[in-house]
Image (tube, rainbow, N blue to C red; front, side, top):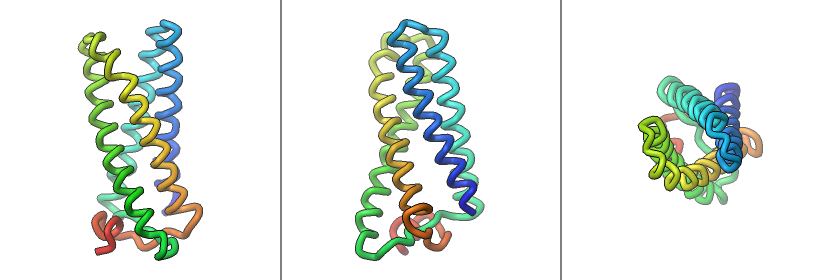
Length: 151
């Protein structure tokens, strides 16, 4: 079912766009607009995660269906994306927590790093989506470990 991966990818792209908008607002010292944009980005990221996790638990993961000679490159890229997404999520939670606790000095230091990580996470996520569902037909839907490593 390609609707759920398309929808989750859309949410993560929108999340990154709202992070960029929030960044622009804070540069212009528009703190309330920044806060609204970043909360919107966080909600979109949570919606992505809910769809992704639900699909993974209920249906499994889609394995790479492209040519065997590039599967190793896809797998390396996917592992990089997974690590980046995990780091980005942790940084995002920490950054939001610092903001809500009004620890603005630390928030200002970690926020730009978090944003950059999030942009790379969203970008690599789109590439994974394109490789799985657009450029090549997705492989079988199977367990996460089998989809990633082939066993």
